[in-house]
Structures are given as C-alpha cells and as structure tokens.
Amino acid sequence: MKRRNFIKQSSLLSSGVFLQDFKVMDHFLEKYSKEFLSKSQMKSLYDREMPTTYLKTKNELQYIGMPVGGNLYLGGDGRLWLWDVFNKNQTGVIYKEVAWHETVVGNQNKLRPYEGANYVQPVKDFRPLEQGFALSMEWEGKKVIKELKESDWDEIAFEATYPMATIRYSSKEIPCELMVNAYSPFIPLNEEDSGLPVTIYSFHFKNTSDHHVTVSLAG
Image 1 (cartoon, helix red, strand yellow):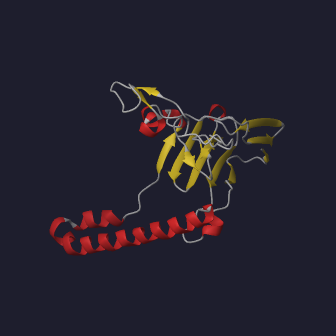
Image 2 (image 1 turned 90 degrees about the vertical axis):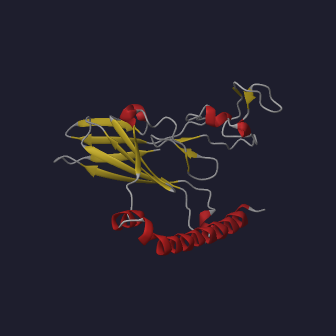
Image 3 (image 1 turned 135 degrees about the vertical axis):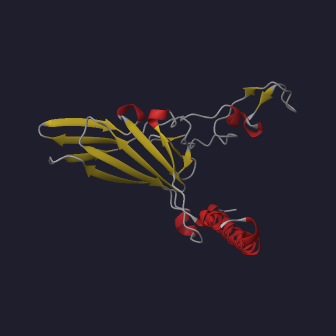
C-alpha cells in the first residue's frame, strides 16, 4: 500500500474510532454521572490539563524520542536522532538482544526487539549523522555561541504535546530565551499534507535584557 493511501485510510479509521469513543463517553456521563460523580468530579473530566514537562536539571531528557516524520526522533534537547535512512530494514528502533532471566521461545534467555528488548533497555539518542542548530548572540561587544544541545544550557524544558513538541532553552550567560516548536505535519483527513516527508522547526527568540541583541541562527 502506498504511504499516502495508508495515512489516509488510517486517519479515517482513527477519526471514526475517536468520534465513536466520544459518543460512548457522553452516553456514559449522561446516564451515570449524577449517580456516581459529584459536580466537581464531573467538571474535572472536561478540564484541560497542563502539558507534561521534562527538565534537564532533573535528568529527564535522556530517553525522549518523539516521532517527527519518517524514521526520525526528536530528542529532549531538540536534536534529531535515529535517522534510519540506510535501508537496513531492521527490526525495532535499534536491533539488539538483551539477556533475560527466563527462557524466551526460540531464543534462550535473550530478548530480541520484537520480544521487548527496547523496552527492557530503552534506546538513548543514537545519531548516525552529524546535524543540529546553533545560535550566535552579540550584545555590548560580547559574542556567545550556543548549540542546541543539552550541555550548552542551564535548563532545557521539553513539553510533550504530540504531534508538536515545545522546547524551552535558558542560560544565565545570555540575555535571551529561546523556544522551539518541532513537529511533522499531521492533519486529520488531509493525507496529502500529512504525508510530507518533512520535519519543521520554528524558532522564537525573546530578549530578556534592556540591550540590543543580534541573534544569528546556523544549521
């Protein structure tokens, strides 16, 4: 099946299931809510929650891998990883076998990718290609270059709101804050645009000082 046709059909199916789930939920709430739920509990079911945020300072970025188009993952610090573009046709994110305390059918005391190896030992950001972005900031005769990688920033906050991630960078060394939105087009019922093999980065800068700051972006 062609990729675009697959996306179209799966989008229609998921949308149908999504809408059906809402009908079932609404029916349940209408019939049983007054009997089992208080008004505050009812209200909480419809409240919008805050996005889950992972922080560098809590060492929470190392296992983040959000799909952002094809076989590309977005890491917690904003760099892309995996880049499975070498036609290896491998099984799992990374093909590996993990020792296991029980005998697994067909593979004694080992787990292969389709038996849970990548869940027992999660894959970290594997990068077979050199890639990334950097900022150059100039103000009052000073110049600082920061790469978009974990080691260059005091804090990185990764907000998980699939299919779009928001990443915020901050450092005491510079008079700017940076926010990045990264995503791959994902538009329900629009398989043509959702099937574009592209990863989009949107950069937003904020001057947090009283000085004029010149910012340059390199990739």
